[in-house]
Image (cartoon, rainbow, N blue to C red):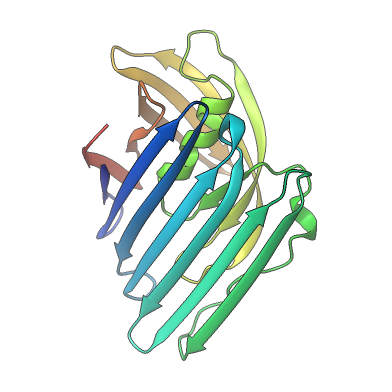
Length: 197
């Protein structure tokens, strides 16, 4: 059970992670206030080497609800099914998957959990591990719109409890502290682990 508190604004996330050999299944809840008050519930399942198989996510607030089912088949093809009900000034859920060629991971917005997949797959917990360029299927929260995101992860150093991995995407950079299992302990200006790990 992993619990994160937002550090940029009020937000909380709880994820129950069941780990297997080279894979995990996570069931989580994220609650936040921006850009509108919301609750997000998700189930994330990976296959071998922590490659995304499915992300099923719902978001809800006062008078609105939306959902997204994002899947990646064994041949690397992504599909997205979105649905929305109620009135809220947010982009529509889902989107075009044509630009996701080469992506093996999803990235759920504002959630430190999905950073673990590329860190684990590329062995970035270990000294001298190098760096990895990744294409992600990024899901914006709370609207659940889908976007292509180019991201880079670079091992900076090992620590007594895990490692520090530099994350960058566009002009944004953050040095993530991760534990020995590859889960984020501190994501500057986003979230900090308050229990678990």
